[in-house]
Image (cartoon, rainbow, N blue to C red; front, side, top):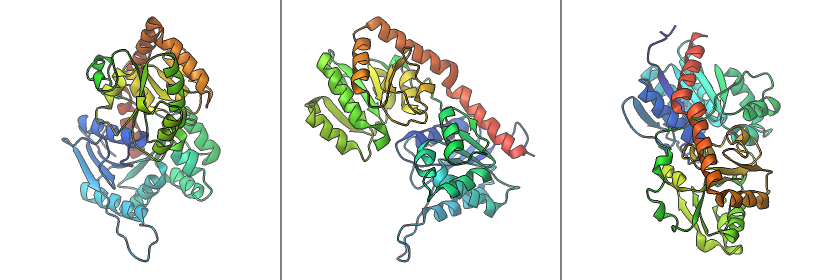
Length: 379
């Protein structure tokens, strides 16, 4: 039995890439360390948002290549690394972010270490269920890993329901929404450095993602092009990914390439979001929409698709605009109306900020994860 007030030793397994699951995992690790826990982050590279500090250690997974293997066996290397860190540092819990391969690897590590000494908590983030976990090739292993986890959480009600529908209908899944550092992402940053991105007379539209197909980056450019016909505007695309070339091609075809900037991974994304007049996220399957939440925290209205878990973050007509997937004309028309009405735009920004302060601050959400860890350890 773990004393209820004893700091925990927590392992965090995650992807290090620019995207929701890696960002949430890194932010959670930093927040847990700041609350006095000993946190060990395990991945094949340093996560984008990982900030070294007291109580926080990064462990790299080394993957060996042998001629016998067509593909490097990352899952085996990760399992070995997790069990090694767990034994050497006496971990209480491994928190696996993204089911494949982290939940499976955490299960194997727990089998090596022994369940009496280690618990596994799995957090589902989206495409680990809607894309990979639902694939017949991966579904049995994903279902097995979820059933063997000591606790399973999902970032939205939508994702919980999808997981039960396509992967594990009898799994107990607790919904814990994503969170944001409300002091880092704040409207007070507006004006600082805006000239880096747009001229004074231009409206600044922003998109930030990992540029995967689900993000519909071509729609982002189309919405911008339609908006730019009505008023001076500029679009900043932050992030990297496989669909960047598609976005660049569409921008050229629509004649707006000179007003679209691709800036890669941005270290101070909070300043970019705070200076935006709108954040565009027309994805066809956001499981939550962390970037949208960060935009709301900065007082920036969000324009997106009424799909997945985004309606749990953005309230249509209150702090943003939601239309059907692919309805670029409707999104652009409503965005233009909002941008032309300063008072309505200000109300939307204030409403988004108020929502974050009431429901999504890290100070409110991180203790919920702590409770999940302690409940798993008490079982």
